[in-house]
Length: 278
Image (cartoon, rainbow, N blue to C red; front, side, top):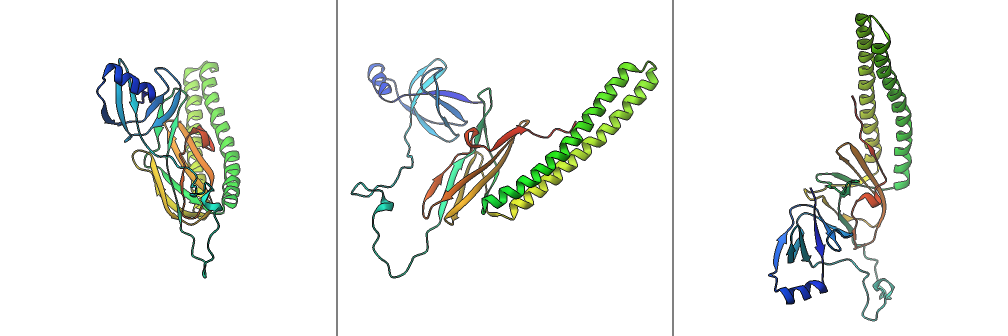
């Protein structure tokens, strides 16, 4: 369940002066939409644990303020990006300080409900192109095999249904139906086994390129610390209800810098129905 609150700044201060509304701080316990006004456009999603200051209350709505920091480019005193400032020559090249990656995982469905990616395994892949090539080859092979099994299972389902409608002898009809049902059950078991084997093969391929792993917390937040500078692919998989969401986001970690990256609908690689074996 997700709630919605209204964002305001200058208007909030004016309302406070006129109405003398008493301000109060509150910590959110669930994912909440931040809207431009009552029934307005969504401008952000506040994760559980965010602290807001309530400045005005209306039936079903609250106007809030909040403070925080966002990442900007580092600027030198002369107004030139810090990276462009000339460095003094050093007698010995110092090792580049490792960087870090942090963010949160959440997706929104077509009805506007947000799911937090809690206790979700994420991994950093080195040699992203090679990893994508290996996993892609496995995926193509497995999709071909699973499609064939799904088609056979659906054909057996239709066969059983057709037997009940076309065979006049009830005993013979039920016998043909039960036989088709048994055969379909076997195909579905084969499909489950094939899907598990394919998942294991993909995991093995990903493991061979994984340089670091982490697990998101109950609020969907994750962190990778002490990451050597360089290119990576951030991989994650989330099953929400009957939908499977997957991310393969290409990133570059810079020496000594912290990269902020949320995994959302906007940057997921693919999504689709999770396997169903019935």
